[in-house]
Length: 309
Image (cartoon, rainbow, N blue to C red; front, side, top):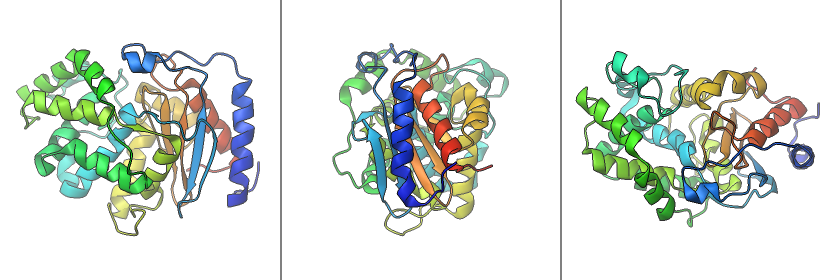
């Protein structure tokens, strides 16, 4: 185990990248979105951002990729900051134990999704944020640009259109919840917002920086407060228990950090009070998580001793 002074992060990242490069079997890129299917599953990037904004990186850490479900963390933060605990009347905080796009639980749980990170829960959060702002996707993009310091972050219209063309199951989830009175906006408008937020392209450096407010207990990069300390703790807790779909238990066991993955191959992770990370490699396992990404985060916590446990 190394010490955890700031000077050790770069050598740790380089060691991890060397180990990952020697690892056979990287999974498969998501194939239902053409722009994702074309990604090389052996691409790899990793970044660590300290609380003061210092960033370390290795590999393809400045290469933009499709963030997909990673953005659910930021949409949740924006809505929770606005409405507080009222949100939890409309979405739960429990692991689902089912695939991220499952319809099964909604019927016997009266249209209340298990957590904000499965698709149904994220649709509810986006719906509620959209009602409060008039542009949920725009609010998300503004937050990501400001926290990352990268004004060039933007939506990928090709990916958004591709998701919309294959979005029947998400539409079914939204209509089902609307039947229970748990969706306020028109479904087409909600789906457009949802697909746009999932289409944001950002790099490991961008996302490691943007996630910093969760390591700073709710404090944004400019020193203002986005979340209360308790709300930041709540989001980190839900990331730990629900952030990697129905593999969250294994992720907590191996990595020991709050994390959120996306089918674009990215994973963000938080060491409260210390740093934030983002790793990207497009090859996924059968549960939709980056094979090399999980392995890299596992090695990071082993080598540094940084964990919430």
